Image (cartoon, rainbow, N blue to C red; front, side, top):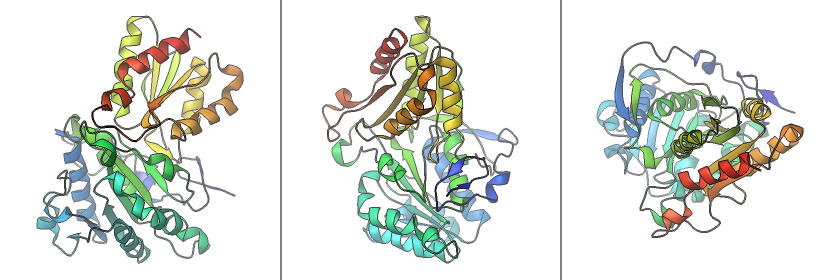
Length: 356
């Protein structure tokens, strides 16, 4: 049993198609644009969400004064403390409150200060939010819930501020998992998540909060969920990734091109439900695939992609599926450079796969 979302892709039990997203692909290029970084794009999206929907609320630890990464700066001053407010230091309570708020027909936008601290809320997310619609036969739901969390390496975070926990949530039918790679993507995808009729976990690459700068439209726009993007065309090997890892992978693609290797680079953007069709079409063309993510390799979402590719493209593959990921160890501090899936690691894997 499955439903289909508006992009026509299969969605697990408990997810509903989005009427709001039928107009999500508005002309992103129309209107004025401004060069801003990723955290400012998130801030813009939250301003738009609160301004366009009186049912929208933003809450979490320290959000009223802007939060640790300043993503909620100015929201409380503009929209008032009744709609933008601090919560106790209790992630389980934050998400539980968000579920109740969304179940009453509101747009609950909950912030978890670091993705590393989302685990106390794990039960609320996977046992309550994800199953809310299913257990009632679609009589009630908490589809207005969006959970934002900064994730991934930051350069000095160590094992409690650098984790990438996306794979835990990709195992759960009933929620969506979305990760942007850039400021423009962050604004459009976050607004789509907030307006989607399903609970969404939205991971923001903290490494890019201030490093990534891009021309971002100032108007209200949304980008479609569950639609991967081919951001670099190629013919020799397909590379698949998401979030901050895309910039590292693109650097490897550029270096590989100097050796005559043509790389096709795909950004999944939505991990659940992910765009299998786009990835499979690319692999059938190139015959080779490499997947890269910061999370540990064992049980990472790259394993799911790899299994799917082997099932659907086995006779077309010219080499084993390659994975360049984090190590199976707690995220280190001083040894972070050894842990990270770097440009050189990816480049070596590209060459090994092409020359297999």
